[in-house]
Length: 96
Image 1 (cartoon, rainbow, N blue to C red):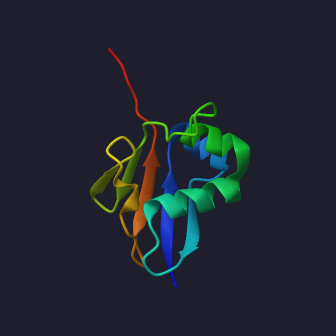
Image 2 (cartoon, rainbow, N blue to C red):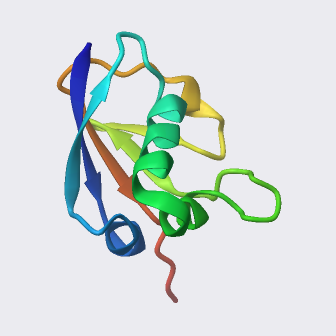
């Protein structure tokens, strides 16, 4: 068993109701499994920010594990987490 710190930004912070959370993980747990744990913990509003409610597909958002970018678009969600990792969840920001 281990722990990761998850940091939330923008609308994900609002949906989670907190800036960060310490989450217990199993050895070898993946980012995808962590996201499932987060949606169970933080509920429907959080899940609606993470997944398309119609298709159930992951929305395009940025996940950083330490300094490594994990992409929901590229399918990097099988990345294995380690005790002490810091995971940041950020929604894309556009502008012009």
